[in-house]
Image 1 (tube, rainbow, N blue to C red):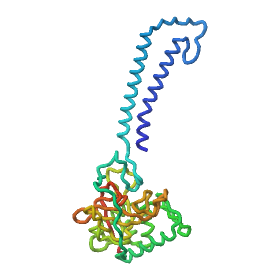
Image 2 (image 1 turned 60 degrees about the vertical axis):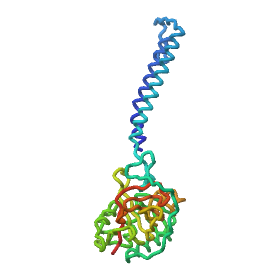
Image 3 (image 1 turned 135 degrees about the vertical axis):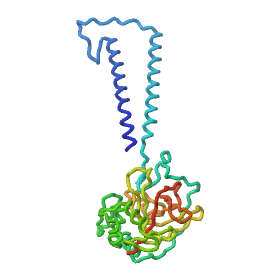
Image 4 (image 1 turned 30 degrees about the horizontal axis):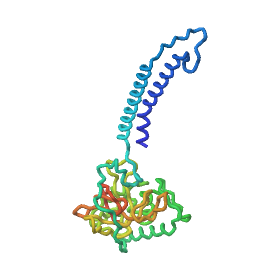
Length: 327
């Protein structure tokens, strides 16, 4: 939308100039034949005598017209280049939900991967680390079993008996926590939390123990089913969302061909599917399960995410946290 808006604003003066030039040419031609703007001159007015026009004069006029046209085309090309510099990168949500923007407008937070995409390594089943985590998995299983219709939208609308689950990532997370870990949800202290709020409460939680229903995990390898992940929108991305949040479904698996990379099976709500996603054939998005890939620093802390898992050609550098529900 930003790209179209800037192009329209810059193009309006050009259109007016072109119309004015066309009108002036029509007026000149009308005077030469005794007409002005399509209206004949009054019969009592003398018709000006036309001066004979030589072939050389015609060639000169034709050449000047070509020069004027060339100048206009050059001017329009320059304006197009200037307008494109105002383009706002679009996302799949993402644009939307954090999916990588087009290559021609990659922000500094996006890093290309120099490896060929491969299938994700297999995941193993494991229990949740806490009772609250088990309740999260039970709630997600209930959603999975009742699901008939789902779509991605920023206003949460759930009719469980009808199998309708319409929400965004933070709306889904809040709905699940309200039924499985209400104390952890109350620690966010907002009636309608967004992804940034989940990130903030996890980042402030202590390591090794719980507080306010949350415990922060120091390394991605510690994550277990029922845990929560969240990241904030990079500062150089469009302000269409605050980040992303979801739930871990299986213990992270190290990616053997990429040092410091981990594949994670997750559940979330989004409009753009992940790797091996249950929403691949659903254009409306909504609730689903897929695979993400995270890169870590030497300490094991996640520093970047890959939206399409091990199929991704790029990663996005941002602040990522993993948290555990303890109450």
